[in-house]
Length: 273
Image (cartoon, rainbow, N blue to C red; front, side, top):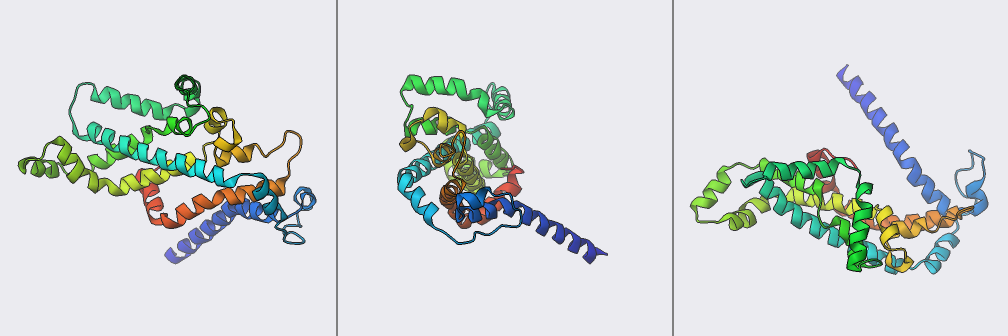
C-alpha cells in the first residue's frame, strides 16, 4: 500500500512537471517556425516543418542584446548587493538588538510586504524624477535598494541562532559590530545566498518599473525590451519567442550554478516565485 501511494505521487508529480514545461517547450518550438505556422489553428501541428534560424538572426540584428544584457545584469547585481547588505544589517537589528520602537518599525516592514508593490510606483517615480535618475541604471536600481522580504528572511535566520554565541563573543571582548560581522553574519550565509537568488529572479522578471523609468530601449532591461516587440494589432511570434529564448539564458545559467541554494532558499523561506 505504501509503495502504491508513492507510485501515485510520482505519477502526479511527473504529470505536473510536464504541464509546467509545456509553455517553455512551446516557446522553443515557435522560435523555429514561420509566422504562418505559429498562428495556424491545427492542434496536431506541433513541430516546425523546417527548423529555421532566421528568427534568431533577425532578432540579434534588430535588438541590441549586448546592451540589454549589460543593463539587466548590472541592475540584478546592484539590487542583490544592496538587498543583501541592507537586509542583513536590518535583520540583525530587529532580531538581536533592543531599541525603542523596534516592534513598530518591524510591523511597518511587514505592512509593506502585504501591500502590492504597484502602489509605490508613483511616489518612487516622483523621487527618481526629482533626483534626475530617469533613463539610468540608478533609476532601475532604486526600488531594490532595500527589501522588506529580505529583512524578514534574515531576521528569522538570526532568531534561529543560539544566544550563547553572542554571550561568548561578548566575554571575548567583541562589541556589537564585531559580533555581527565576525560571529553572526557568517552563520546566515545560506540565507543571504537564498535572498540573493530571490532578488535576482524578482529583478530579472520586473516589467512595469523598467518600462516606466527607462522608456529608452537602449537603457532598459530585457523584459521591458521584449514587451516593446509586441505590436498593437499584430506580432511576429516566432521572432518574439526567439528573443524570449535568448533572454532566458541568464536565468538558466544562474539556476544551473545555484540550483542547490535555490531549492534550499525556497524550502527555508517558504516563499514562492
